[in-house]
Image 1: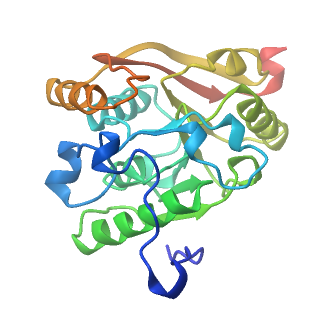
Image 2: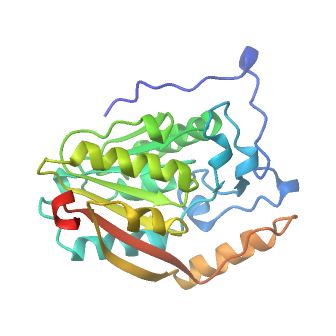
Image 3: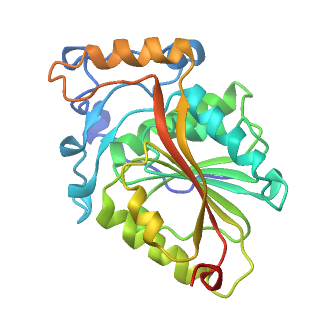
Length: 261
């Protein structure tokens, strides 16, 4: 998949200023995933530092890359719920993709495509560089793309889709998105599944007609990821985020309004 949504470079080729949370002075610590694969998905950026000029900026939560072991476990659990089409017919969509770690991980599965949607242009630019490195190393089984756009305005591609959420935004934005999905899917035979990690806005999906919850529970980090995330978050000067050995997760599937009425 060709990425036609190019990012912008700084004036006169100058290197863009790092976002707060991506400097060593901010506690920036590289995750073993980055050290192993030579990409840049580490760092913790508070939502207040992710302004892009969009009306939904105030609903940003934070940027932090999902633990690889949690991602792989939630995808494995989803596949046990037997999505009707084979995985190679599904498009994977990460809403709030950040620097693209979930897209990189998803590309190792034989999805039809792996797409990341990111509102912040700086994060989208970094993600595109990561995807280029990943492709060059021959690690991707699926075509990859990063789209710099508001998730509310993103139109899902035709065919079966599985969307990934790592708690990227607050309830007002999520309500708009799932309501839009419901309108789009109503009256159609379409598979749309949701993998929701750190499911703080679970109630939004619970209240939206048309979606059935397949799973709700804790998905544990591997020991290596738990140690890495604890070390990374312990280095944050403001100490406003903490790490546990698991993530609260949910899996939802569109089943049709009639089945939920």
